[in-house]
Image: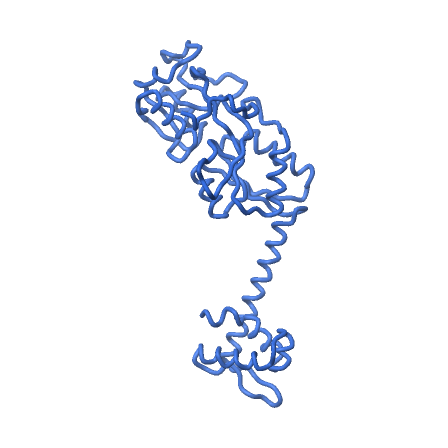
Length: 310
């Protein structure tokens, strides 16, 4: 098989010309080279691929089968190359953008909308998931950029830049013993049942780190994959949760209480070392602009007590 792959163009040229000299001219190689490569291919597959025919050559049935396959393979590759060029075209290509579920409310729509005002033909494929999944897919080249929190540290393959900070608060049922408090210390939660996101989500990592810093391990009652589901479980009285603020409107059936000291997580854009020109342009736009992040976000500042300092 390894002998055939480099000779796809040779087989396609022989199929088209049925002449060694013209095939050599088409490929830009000496005629003896074509003859040697044909002989080597015949030996590799175990049967002659061409036979003399008048002043030229003729493909055998085996040769025709391979040559037809080579032509189809080259057509598929040509289509792939064209699609890649279209993908990376700064004017009309496609960006695969990964982000946490919660960031789909305002942050991602604001950034995508602003960029498309300048580049209206650019297409976005949006991929949501946990922080762990987003970073893995970024390393594997499945997505171009990712918005996550917290930013990765000590990762040689990925680099991140902070964009905004988001306060995390304690969410409790409206009837909870702490519901009338103005602030709550993490140590006061040691005996509580927690409703959290699953392992792999940034908020779960922050919750575990906060409790560890306060000297206890959280007692997990329920785990979910979306913050709205976690809020619903809290509202139903099944536990407390550490979550970003719900928004400007009051949260029905639950109360949000700031922590003491306040706790923020940093939202940032993460990239790998290699970016297409189009993905690089969007990355530069994200860092240069000040989009409407939404009411629950503030510009990232070093003074915030970030999650990775716990």
